[in-house]
Amino acid sequence: MSSPSAVRRPPYADSVLITGASGLLGRALVAEFAAAGFSVLAQYRRHAGEDGERVRWLRGDFASARGTAGFLRRHRQALVSCRHVVHNYGPIEERPTAGLTGAQLASAFQAHVLPALDITRFLLARAPLRSVLFIAFEDTGVMRPFLKVLPYAVAKNGLLLVGLSLAAAHPGVRVNVFSPPTLAGAAIRHPRVRPAAPEEVAARIRRIVQGRASGRHYRWAAPRHRDRQGDRHG
Image (cartoon, rainbow, N blue to C red; front, side):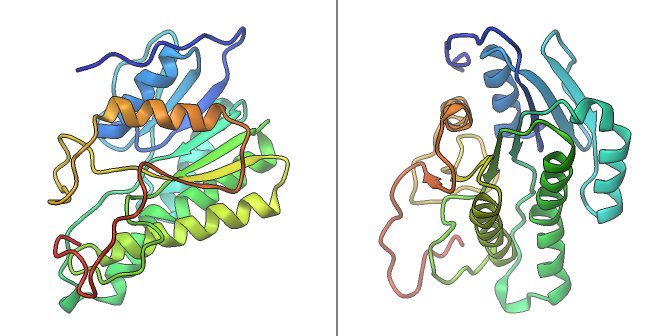
């Protein structure tokens, strides 16, 4: 396991909120940003890490609008100092498209889109926010059939539209979207894609946050060509 990227520490500690911080990519993000000198607020639902000199874990359940509002209310004092937010929260589940229900689609939007939008609006109104990064998935923006993860794909594509639209609506804040690759060690993996180490992906995300661009959809790699049937895994 490689260590977080060696980067030059800033003269002051920028504060970054990382949602979904207890997952595979989330923990790599916490380590990466802390090593870079950031003050990290790490949101978790069930499994917190250890608080440290640069890391504070904040419990929050985004399964409902009420849960998101409670998170913002409880942690308001810490959140109003945030200069950056990385929206990494959002579980992925396999659900056969043939039996998909509207409730399942709505649940995916609640998990991926609504908390990210509500948290961003909260920070835009109350914090010295400089950058927002929405984490999508590797096939975001690719129009093809999805046979097992359609709710996830629909929600992540919605997140892409939200991110690019907020970038246009708030020109004083850098707002971007990043589509990461399949991660090594992930429970659900693309059979045709070589997975990437979470630490490498976290380093790329940190560079995007520290960059100057806005309104961009960053990808780990160019989209792959697909036949008319699409890949069976999705």
